[in-house]
Image: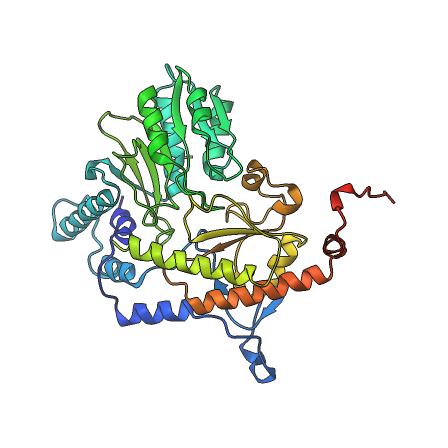
Length: 426
């Protein structure tokens, strides 16, 4: 508990940033230089045997975000001079930290329309998801033995559900439509008298699709089933009101919204009260408009120069800072290796090392060859237009280079139906 005050303060931003923090942020997010000339060779960086001309452009904001200087400004006093344990009730140091804890709790609650008493600080969204999924079902195990979730949830939710299955619980993994959205009628039909929880992610971390939370909450309320949503990718990016949306439990994370790693919060409704078994296994509108413009700039820039580019997931219902694209006739791993000056992912950071096609894209009905070609571009508060333009330039260059080496692309351009070809075995 001694670290509680340090965990929660990053979620509470103050205006103004110290010069040192601003300089550190500027250095950390500065765009990488262009390809080095002969005189710039000493400025190159070699990582895992790959030499690049400087730090890559950072466009992986769904994996993690840089710390906002104002967050650092708010945190520093509690690392240096106000480092008391909030549970030390007999001296000033403890009183200061306790007051900071409660102020932060109130600010987090205000972001989602909750009562401060409904906010519980954790180590992050993964811990929240484990508490929500396992905790609810274990607490009500005598009466509720069924969980409903979707096939495109974060891995830690799916892992928690599979763990419950090993304990004898039933789990329904709903498919999603081709645009990534859950079918509400199918969801309603899946609810049983013994359903104890519906867990649907607010904003998908891989394709950016925004689920219809208010409609899901209404269905769950009518059926008397708690509704949990993993909102790690949603907080501060789309409007959230736990009462209007009928949310009973919600998982939040600090490092997805310009806070440090290792801090999260679980919203747990008090009325009607939801119980869990303990487990151990203001700038939003401006940001949204700006990131929407960056997303359109990136998409238009790539499509103006490259054909057969597919957007994965709904464009109408999505967080604009997440743009997931598939490039036909291009092998995804080769594209990623070629984009060593741009930090992007082929999917969730938790599964980015896997060579398997994305299970989220497969759930959308994307064919395996196209699922292998997907790239997730993540943009956020500190992404610049210059970085987007450079990302466009590098992506277009690499896609064209790989397609020039692809006989499949050449055949497709010649009008040959690739699906009609019978490939011989050697």
